[in-house]
Length: 252
Image (tube, rainbow, N blue to C red; front, side, top):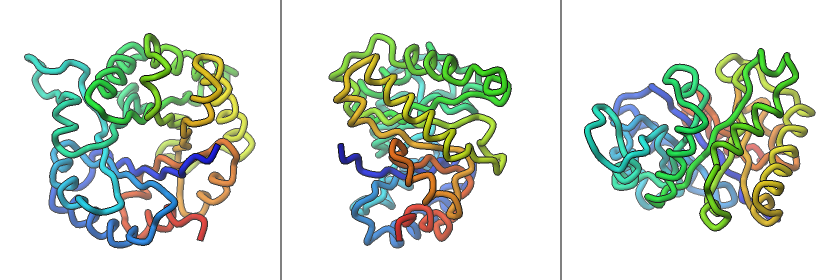
């Protein structure tokens, strides 16, 4: 199946509103001739509506970095899926390893967030990945299988047409380390087989699976050359529009 490549930038806790708008506007200009690759950036929630407005009628999509699964209520500091949608987002990251590591997210809460995201008409970018210790103990596939099956528990085949899966080995995020080509190839192939086992071959064929973990202009072409890699979730290298465009234009 012909899956459209998807390059996403996670801006994490960087850039004030004006800085985010400036970078987003510059990126949109650089992406004006990009037709075959879908591009998305995820600024902070404070910058989200500003960036969404700046990117209106451009080829760059907007996503959020997180959401809370309740629709509304006395949850100080949280933001609902409906609020994210109303702010102009099309996508939302869910289950990023930093959310799991620093803020206590579990596979169960990730599942609730995915359901809330889909219920609001947002497209979830579902992040999974193993730690260095888990990989060294030979538990990579056990961890990934549990994250995927628990994260998508109770969801039906018809609800997952917009799902994007992002494999980010925790030990490669922000470290400069990247999983070897053979490692990435094996994991992505395994993940596609897992989606087929849990749901259907059609969903497995259609679902885009991104790789994340120190993706840079120097290694993106090799990563994108892997059969089951459909895109990249980029951290630090997405903060600079000139650097990010060199990742987006990996095939030129």
